[in-house]
Length: 446
Image 1: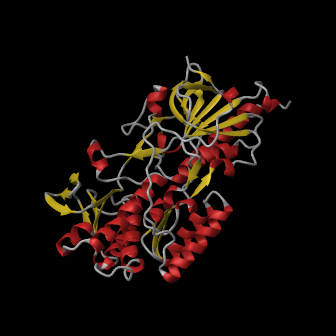
Image 2: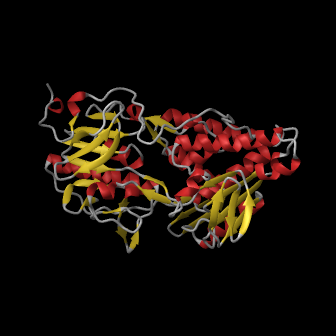
Image 3: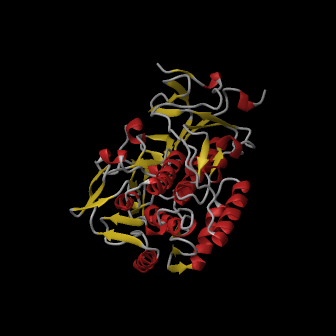
C-alpha cells in the first residue's frame, strides 16, 4: 500500500474546478499528498468564450473539458462531483451536497477555495427573470436559444409592427463581456443569418448596449476604449452610456426614462463572489470577497487559501482584477506554497501578480490589447487575442477544434452551432453525479 492510500498523507481539498482550482491541482501533481477537487459541475469551463456559444460561433463542447479528463494523469488527485455548502474551519472540514447525500463532511489538512463568481444585479434581483446573465454553459445555451428563437418568432409573425420588438436586443453592461457579445451578435445578424429568412431581414435587428459608465471597456486606456466604440458604431451597435437601466420586464427596459421595447435582454454587467466569506466568517470587502493575506491565506487560518474572483487582495494600492490570469497565478502559487510546506522547504515570497496584458475582441478581425505601455487595436491585436485564447484552452483537441471553426467562420461566415435545443438547467441545489463519491472520503456531518 502506498502512502497516498493511507491516512498519513496530507489531504488538500480544492473547491472549484475553474481557472484557479485547476491551476492549484496541477501545481500539486508531484506532491506526496491526497488532492481532492470538488466541483458542482463535471467540467472545466473556458468562460472567456461563453459569448461565442451564446452567439453560435462555437458549440458548448468546444469550450468545456471534463475535469477528470484534464487531471487523469495525476495519480494523487481525486475529482468529486458535489456542491460545497459550508466550511467548518475550526474542525478543518467542508460540508458537501452530492447527488444522493446532503450535509456530508469532507476533512482537510489544507483547503483552497476557488469558487469563482456569479451574476450581480446590484440589488435588483427581480431583473434576473427577464435578463439572464452569462456565467455557465447552461446560460450560454439558454441565451443562444432566446436569440435564435427571436428570429423564428419574427419569421412566423404576421404583423410587421411586432417585428421590431422581437428583433431588438438589449445588452446591459459595456465591459468586455458586453462589448464582445454585442459585436458577435451584430456579425451574426448581418452575415450568418442574413440570407436564411424570407419574411424578415435579420440585418434590420437593433442591438443596444447600455451602461451607466461614460465609456465602453472601462478598465482599458481611453484610446482603446474609443477604438472599440468606433468599431461598435461601424457594426451598427447602438451604444448608450451614462445611464443605467431603471427597470427590466417582459416588455423591455427603461433607460433614462425612455422605454426600449425588447423581448431579449441580456445581462452583461457585474459579478458577485461566492458565499465563501460567510462560510469562513472572515472579513470581506464591500463586494463580499474574502480579504486574504499576501500569501493568499485567510487571516487566522494559515491552512486555508482563497484565490480568484472570491479573493480580495491589493497590489500597489489597487485591488487585483477578477480575470482568469489572476486566478491561474494565484492557484499555482497556493499549490506550490502547500507543496513546499509538505516537503519542509522555505515558503516562497508573498504573491505578486504579473500582468501579461488585457485583451477584448470587438467582432471579426478586430481586438484591443493593453499590456504595460503597449496599446494596440485592430487585426494584429485580434491575432494575439486568438493565439492567447487557443493557448489557454484546457486540452489540445479543443485547440484544434476551435482553431478550425474560427478559420471556417472567418472565411465563410458559417457558424458552428445555430441550434435551438430544449435545455433546462437543474434547480438550485440539484446535482447530477457522474459517479458516486468514494465512501471512505466522506463521513456524516455532526
